[in-house]
Amino acid sequence: MSPVHVPGRAGSAEQAQARHTDTRRTFPPLPPRARPGGDAALTWWGNAWVDALEDTSLDLGRLARGRAYADRGHVDAITVTPGRVLAYVHGSRPRPYRAELRLRTLTDEEWTRFAETAAARPDHMASLLDKDVPHALAAAVDLLPAVDDLIPACTCPDRAEPCKHAAALCYQTARLVDEDPFVLFLLRGRGEQELLADLTRRNAAHTAQERRADAPPALDTVPAREAFARAEHLPQLPPEFPAPAHPERPPSYPQAPDAPDPLALDLLATEAGARAHTLLTTGADPLAGLTPWQDAVRLAAAHPGSGLTAATRALYAALSRGTGRTPVDLARAVAAWRQGGLAGLTVLEDEWDPPAGPFDRARPALLALDFPEFRPRRNHLSTAALQLRLGRDGLWYGYESDPGREDWWPRGEPSPDPVSALDSLLGRE
Image 1 (cartoon, rainbow, N blue to C red):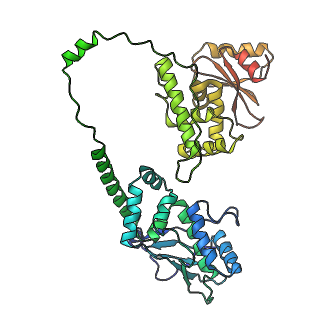
Image 2 (image 1 turned 180 degrees about the vertical axis):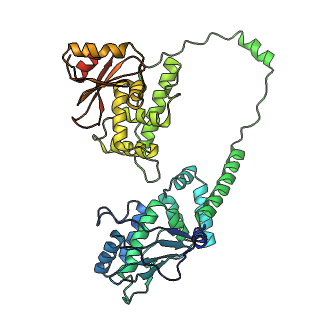
Image 3 (image 1 turned 90 degrees about the horizontal axis):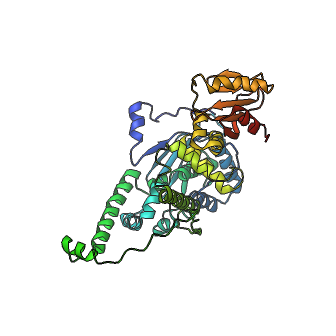
């Protein structure tokens, strides 16, 4: 249902710009849910918002109709200000109803207690910047609504509290709070910029105080000549321990309410150990020349296929979002990396015009094996379902696609001989 213009709402660019201040945020209408009736919220604080609504209402039927209105996208743009959220909701009549929810704002003393609790711990600061709300911070003040905290109102003739229009607004607000907890902070009385500025100032004061407390005592100095004279009489240092054959696995990290994500900790620790082991044994940094996309492919290739475990699927999804690629792009790139490392990924993404020589000699060799249908294009030799690509490293890489589709996937082992690469592609020894 398309939005209906309501008199009195901002219509000029200047009025729209004025609405987006630190203490007034207007969000465009949220799209209808792809799967109506699913979870109303995904985060624990979003679910607390929904629980406050559902625990307050005595009419489950009105809640269900309000949830259906929200799922179908009947709620127009939502405006959030301290202690208030407002939107126009489309019902059965042509003209929408004006629905709103009110919520108590926190006092200055409560905000001071919240900011001091957050600034005292760097992990709490990091969580807030990552749009996450630790349980300990929410417990420091009455941040989340409880029963009867939400006060609904609507211009419809229904006197129920909440009516289905106010319930629809509440469910859509839960989606906003899910995505950005600073919407909840604004409802409690503080805008994002003001809150972050206060937290930054308090965190800096805590850090300076800790540095003063942890300052090491002054040490007695020793003249350099005397120190070197002593060194001449010291025994030889023992030989270095041999490097381990493989990097060790990190310890397991249990799940705790205020702990970072165990999967992320395991991934970071594993990567740090592998990188340190390579530096120790070869003197070279394995990540020095990689772009963020190449490093994401390398990370994904070091784990099992994306369909095996929930943790690996989560890793693939996070890497895809972080690089702006699709999971299919990442899976194809992982197959190329496992085929030939960075060179294999380059072959997947880089077409080039090879000079005369190995490329020109490949077609007669394939013709002798009764493969006359290979067609040349730049560094590719292709049939309807098979393809060989010549890399800049002089190796041939096999690719496969369903007939009639340009959906090429790396297969087999690379080889300097196109016939050997084709045998590997076809699964022949």
